Image 1 (cartoon, rainbow, N blue to C red):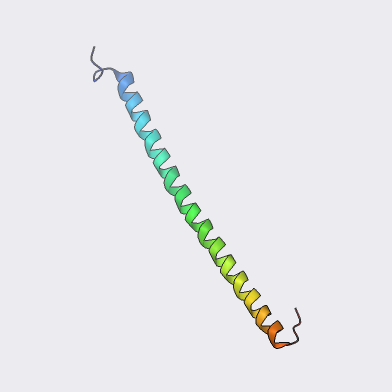
Image 2: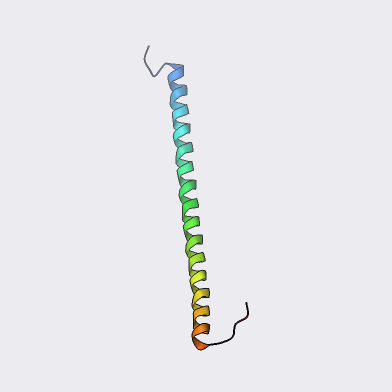
Length: 67
């Protein structure tokens, strides 16, 4: 009996193909999530740096600030 006529071999190949597709989709999802996290962290750092810069400028001028 050849492997091409073995029904369990075809089922195994189908399972492997579906598993490979699932794994590829999971990698794509994880990469997108990682990019999103990185963007959010960069944005938060930029906003924090801007706020710190404003406070430093106000302190250098001796301007009163109420938070």
